[in-house]
Length: 324
Image (cartoon, rainbow, N blue to C red; front, top):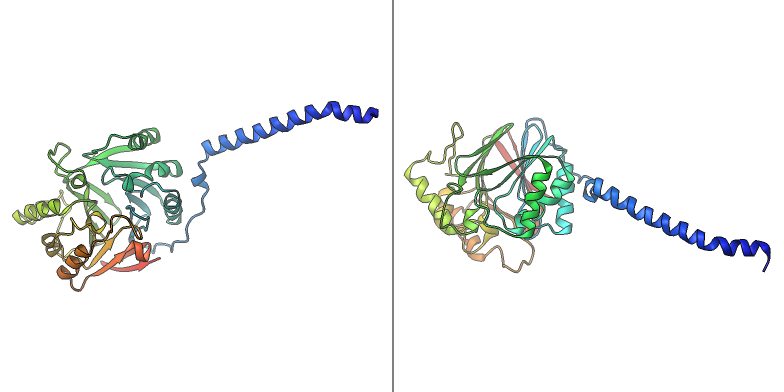
């Protein structure tokens, strides 16, 4: 063996050590970058048409078998109502979609503690600076993933609150009022019926977002409203349930929701159903669809499983509905 070969043989272990250390350093650097800059924060923005001056929008996102609705106010502030199931594809989509809206400020609102509604919120905390987070007044959940959401909200340092009847959220050009549950102390209430139900007035166009409430809760709201038209009013914020423009139907179009009494009161012009294609729950139920058509014969139904994202654009007290 020549002298040069002997030197190379002696250097080989050192080179291997250097390569191993370099590889380990690269892995540590990547881990540090992922910790400091969450991967979803690097996702590109979705190509969403820009909001016109003075326009408000409601976005019903197609997130599979789950819910995610975005109220976009006239100043660019967003209220994200539910965050999907947390599935990898849908959460990437939500992050990209919100980026595409170029928000001035983001707040989160969870209607109730089912995984198909809150699963993606933890990742939204990682991708955005969240100003406020509204949690269910009656959480009904004690599990690891919901605990992680609470921990993420506390770590964010944002305002944390709950909503029950008469609590209102104001934004540029509109407001939302919680009409159910009655209070955080309400007893003998089923988990789905504990959902936050929101009445929205955005630029004079009205919408009702029903979470996962059942026909039982719907009928209770109808009975209460029949006592006094202004029973759900919150300060200067009127709540009028007759002839709603937009209804996000209860519980993904479940058979045990969308009761005839409820639909006849609301008589919605547009019904939006958020559900997953070929889902195991068979949502939406044929019975629920039939009741909607019977009570609102001129109403139109938009399904996220068939159409994808449903966007309601509001301007000059009128609205248009598009899909993407």
